[in-house]
Image (tube, rainbow, N blue to C red):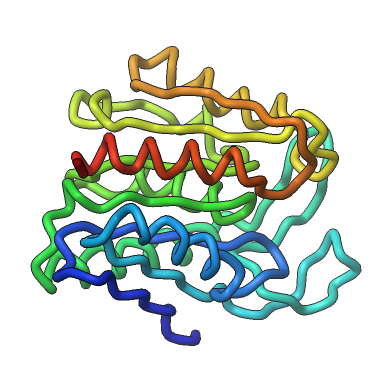
Length: 220
């Protein structure tokens, strides 16, 4: 696997956002967004990992960057769970590397778009055992919720922001809302924001993300 793209802040890093791209994209996909956000987060490092390239069943078996294989689209996504676990372990290794570099895990935010969001949901709520600063879920869903979901007391303090397009025809908003509702039902402080867009990112959304990150990271 290729090394993650590291975007160092202007000041010595005291916080970190680990941001996973979507299916078929790469580690550079959110680099412009991360650089925009760093203008308001002068001590936040961004880590942008790269998914391995592998065949994706629903796309005719063509190989592309993918955090896990999607085997079927309906009635819900059928995924390769072993590959999901491997990707979660990749995220955990990135968290541990940031912790070992001096960043408090309570100041590490996980973020992911589409398939990347599914991985960070799985990592944060089902696999990582330590503290985290927050979770950003962009145009995504949670294929391993709700059958496995049992949120412990430590996770009921983890702020989550779900952002989705009302016109998303790749991951329909009801799939994102289902993940939101599963967390809300277990007392997680989760917020939902919907935008007039498809499976993409828009300027208003980036502004909202910046405001939210400043709040959870307590940046003045």
